[in-house]
Length: 408
Image 1 (cartoon, rainbow, N blue to C red):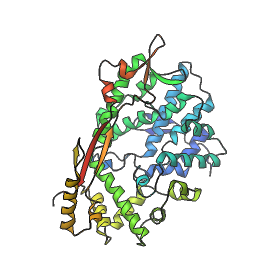
Image 2 (cartoon, helix red, strand yellow; image 1 turned 90 degrees about the horizontal axis):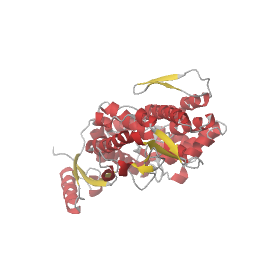
Image 3 (cartoon, rainbow, N blue to C red; image 1 turned 120 degrees about the vertical axis):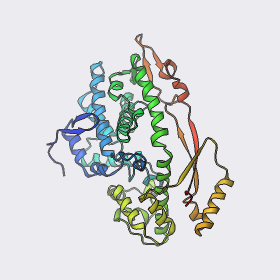
Image 4 (cartoon, helix red, strand yellow; image 1 turned 60 degrees about the vertical axis):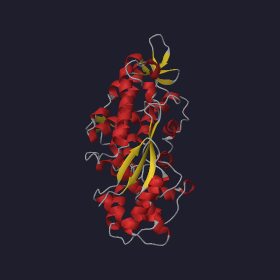
């Protein structure tokens, strides 16, 4: 049901008052699909490391929209023509860019649904909302899909210096207390311009860009790829996969109707009908947490033990290495755990496993960040930087991890 726009501003702890720019944007925010984001954690299981990290995708989406409003103001002040309709399309595109996230942000798309990313789910939601709002989201969808004729608009939504990154780095820094990630979002936005239909940064903004790139690298190693968060997220994936395996074999597990729907059938990208999407829209963190509290007492040792580990923060030990762990070491730890707890090798693999993580703060092969010099020429920030070796930060660093239970 479409309501009247009575709420004009939202008080945000990062930016202060955020103005809702139009009736349409207000009605989208009020929609149940968007309100669901209040119950989706922005940082997954990171609160097990950083107790303050309980902010949601709802917070982030509103913050990113606020920064988009500032970007439109700045670009207009520099002579970039952006119509009212185009501005609204930008606000909607960034507002809805994460609407497809499932419980704990990334856990569901890698466990009980197959072959579909949250970006693809976001697009499915946007298409449904477009029908409900009589085609008023067409422009936003074109920007989101990179089909808008004005290239810089997509870069504002999804690029190396987009409003998404500018908000989540600052917001996640604030809620985790990791001050090194606190980028000056509005300072960076004040330096933005458009040249040959591409988003660029004024030359004097080089130090802000440098800080942004370094902060991004730091936040990935220190926060997003923190080994304890990593172990917790892998356990969430494991418990959901185990629950699905048991359900497909006929085991009736206690779970909400929405979660049971996905546990009891194999759901691929092609299976996401409007009915399936409607069920997905009922899923949030609460479904998974409630399930874990019930599964803690299940007679399946894998299901119960992982649920206990997540609920009581009795997580796996994690070793990080620059080199892959040998198959021999992995097998040795699996067999030892298997024998000690009388498990099968398959069951032990839920508790002892390896994987890899990677970090690339700046990509030089895709939509580089260019500085606009006073003479009108462009220079890649990595080549222009004389304070920090940004070019070195463009290399992908890969690390390997081994997870296994702590000694009792």
